[in-house]
Length: 143
Image (cartoon, rainbow, N blue to C red; front, side):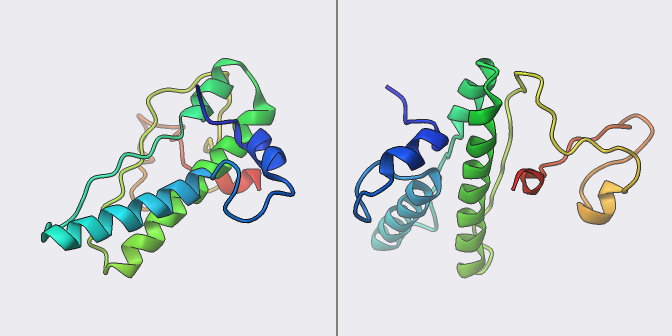
């Protein structure tokens, strides 16, 4: 069985006491990092590996369900923020790699329209002639 879609999770948790109900992806991310970090320190390890998947984005996309896709993307963005905050707190030793395996459902976010040079906002994005439409991670447009 899967976790509920974020849009449903929020409704299902409405009115429940704090800590009850289904946790969000960011809550699970934060807790996993706390536990793994403590364990790594306890055994003298230099760190840990954690894979966080926003898999419900894919499920909603395959169903062409934009009402569920948007909250899922935002929930994943919140999880990425948790990792970013953890990395800042540990002095930058944490490395974050975020990838997508594919797009489904025809939803395109952050497509460069030629009015803003993405390299000014995201210096690692290429805007060469062979990539006239670089895709950017811009979930803020959904908020």
